[in-house]
Length: 322
Image (tube, rainbow, N blue to C red; front, side):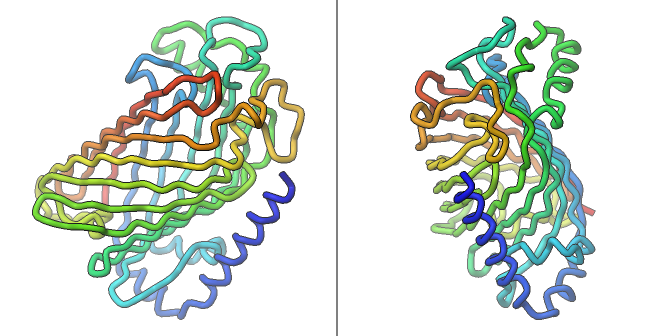
């Protein structure tokens, strides 16, 4: 595990060197960009499952001033003629549970309780003429009890109402969350009311180390994917549907295997029981009116360890540009 961490550490500084090599014109260009805020709420209650990836919440802010942060040097900045850059910060909270939440006790062989809380800085670079988008994100936080997963889920179950989740005392132990995410999207084909994009992404750090390849098709009253990140204030109403397929290889997953440094987690999935290769299908309905956008998501993922099941969850997000 320590070896994986040092690989991640070296990778972070490689990205930092790339960013530092860019010219100051980047900051001048960034001042021309708009700002936005938004939030996402994921939950498996949409499919009445209430296990595995049970809930997730994100809130973010995009503003050109964020490019002045010292952490911006860790983000990918490969600027070419026509690139548009967005800089933002985000708070993420994730919650994972076993299947057997109503019963107390240690649930050996079931997914362990786990939660994380992180603060991230991210950057999105897109170029509609060349048909690419580069996303990079640096995250710092905690996995374990200090992420308050038990308290959050107990409140939700009290409001719903539903049975109280039992067994949180056996959750993944507290540990450092330090992760770097990078993604590259490329247009393959574009026609009226249709677009095809392929993507490659990676996570490196103390919580996730993985590599994913995906394909997305889009159809509807839409502009190019590579100019849709920031809508025009007078763009009117548009709607489109996206279907995505992802295959991912996971070398390390702290939500299943326990933290990289703290080895005291009372319940983990053993390494030889984990399915390193998983598939995920996503369906995304986008509704946009001028500077407002709402997205409805549905996901289905293959079993992540030998005794687990396929899992489905849904999500809704809202974003406003100003």
